[in-house]
Image 1 (cartoon, rainbow, N blue to C red):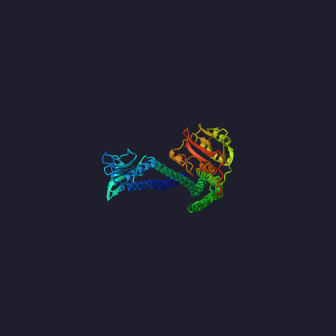
Image 2 (cartoon, one colour; image 1 turned 90 degrees about the vertical axis):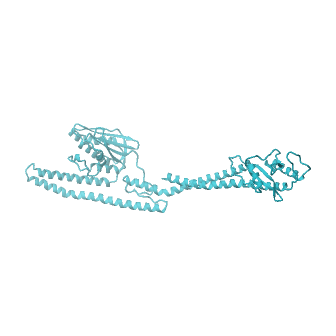
Image 3 (cartoon, rainbow, N blue to C red; image 1 turned 180 degrees about the vertical axis):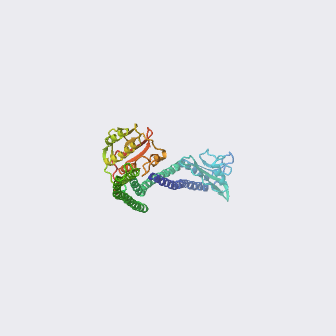
Length: 476
């Protein structure tokens, strides 16, 4: 989220800087060129004032008759001007013949900017401002002014200036603007980093706390942090909501535990009375046997409900545990029952470690193995495997039972749910729910899939490394 927000802010800042920098660069270039144009206008005006009083001229290729000091003065001025500044300058009569010029071989071309400026000045107007010349262009600046005598245009002063020096000044100005834009961009990026960090700090804390609560650490709370007032208010509201949800869950767990505990005494008394009543009835009475079976089933359900409430309420005591050895021990404990039903219970459990509560993990594994033995027919086998991969350690229990459909795999583990095909198998439907609660309290999980043998494969997963410490200011 911070990356996306930074991209948006930096893009907007870049657009703003470009929108400011481009007009500024254009103004700098225009100002530099305008200085040159104004200087050329002043120069052409000065030359026009000198040429205004030149009275003698050549006719065609005929030599000048007599001596015109004003013309000689004009020619000297133009020659010095060209020698000092390298600018072509000349005064040309209306028909294009030169009055004076420097260099001596310069002529008005038939086309181009020079001809256009010359033609415009013949109409007693100063030539148009030349187009903008940029550093990457090799342009020239042509300025022309009319020479007017007695209200008539008798000649035109034309200057043709190189732009190398001007383009260098424009380039220097543009580089300064670019450096300023780059510096402003760096400052803007630093500001954007601080701004996004300030805005998103409460969001990151809220996200971490939400993840903790989702993984079973219900006591996690959002620590006080900076940021906008709206996000601080959201953090307080989230803590209030988390407190309320935790209270509701605690009440539900307490109710289930209390109800299970309170019902056990009258149920035990009821079962005792059933046994006393059975003594007065003939041996093998089907009705009393059915009542006795239902009473025992109800007792198992109450025991499982109490175990589930305790599993969801108890805080795990996590240790670095050899889960391979633990799985071997539990498989050995269940092997006599498996042999009694003609089932081979095999364990392939090398030494692998993980962070788990040994008691809770053993209880969860017992429930999974018990479930596998219930649904595996005689002559088949149940396999227990332990392995470690990446950041997790797993213990897999695969049976050779009838398996489950895709729809049933999505529902397995729900409380009191049992497949319609297995209603005749003893159980309350809470065993896998209890296993999931026991593992989830310590950061583990329970997953279900089809086994290679066609039955069900249940995977118990726990972290290989110690859980992270709560963030500063969070309550666990």
